Length: 251
Image 1 (tube, rainbow, N blue to C red):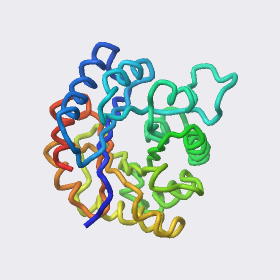
Image 2 (cartoon, rainbow, N blue to C red):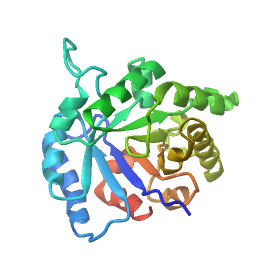
Image 3 (cartoon, helix red, strand yellow):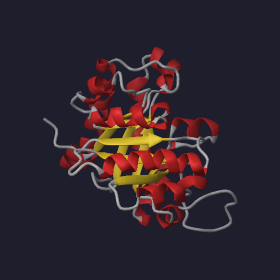
């Protein structure tokens, strides 16, 4: 049985203004406050504009706060960007990097995710590096080739269980209601684990790999019971406190 501590991470995407953030993060923080010894880590990643409210709500609890992206340099002439140090300054301990929506909407590449991961580490953040195939790639039986390329290119040397989390997000299952079957999820998670072991040896045994394709209360327990699924990167269900908490309770 795995000794890896489950991580339940909520990616709020471009949702929630400040008051909504205070309410939602506050609800999760209050539930965490009532737990003497939680068996999981829990994280919310709101928009940049709401990080302060989320950090305030989480203060004094085991609820963690993270950013949804960062730049690969610590400062400079990069209008509209946020550095990893700025996220730390706002109370963040994690950052999501290389999400499929960033790769698609902002043409992010494995190389840019690699550079951002190094910047996150330098600032003291834990990087959640996202990888995943499209429906076209899956239908063409290219899933494992795509995953291998993304893991190899996006995860720098120096990754450890303490500074890196991998999130497998089948693009065809994000926001569609489709979910990978347990067999499909374990196949890819096991493959990712094997790729990490080739590079990082026994360190890979402790690295957490999250499932990020429409995890919800109804399927969370089955997915997180799989050998190499160590939690979830949650989208829609993370915007509803009861649903997000139910997923955490299933870990």
